[in-house]
Image (cartoon, rainbow, N blue to C red; front, side, top):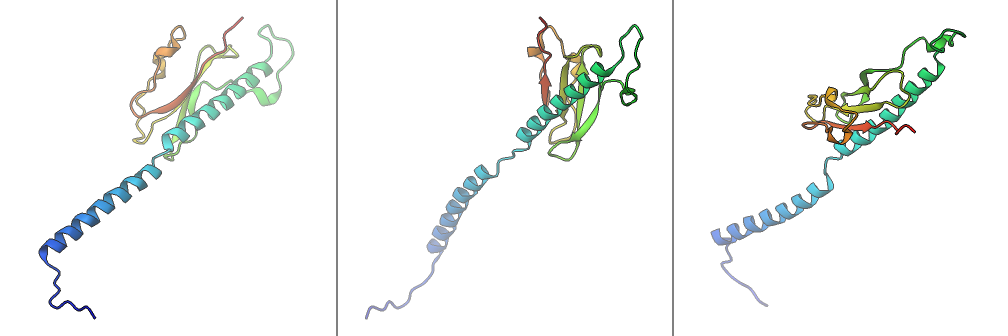
Length: 156
C-alpha cells in the first residue's frame, strides 16, 4: 500500500489554485456574456417599425374618411379627430414611451413617419425637424436613440 506522509498544501499550491479558478471563471464569464447580449435595441427598432406602420394606416384611414375640401357629404362622426401629427405611443423595451412624428403635409397620404425611443438612457437626442425630404438618407437617430423612419412612397 502506498502512503505519503507529511502531505502539505503550501503557498505555491494555493497560488496555482487561485490562478486556475480565475482562468476558469473568466472563460465561463465570457461565454455567459455572449449569451446574455442586450437585445433591447433590436427589439426597440422592430417595435418602432410596427408602430410606424400602424400610424401610417391610421393616418391614411383618417384622411380617406374626411369629406372633400369643397364641402358636400359629411364625414362619419368617428372621424372628427384629425390625422396624427406627433406625440407618444406604446412602450419601448426600457419601459418608456416611443415618440413619433408625421413628417410631411397632413394632406399627403404617404408622408414620412419617424418612430423612435430615447434608448437605454431615456434621453431623446434625435431632432426629427432635421429630416429633409430631398435627402432622407442623411437623417440619422442620434446618441443611443433607436428608431425607424418610414419613408413616403415615390409618387408616379
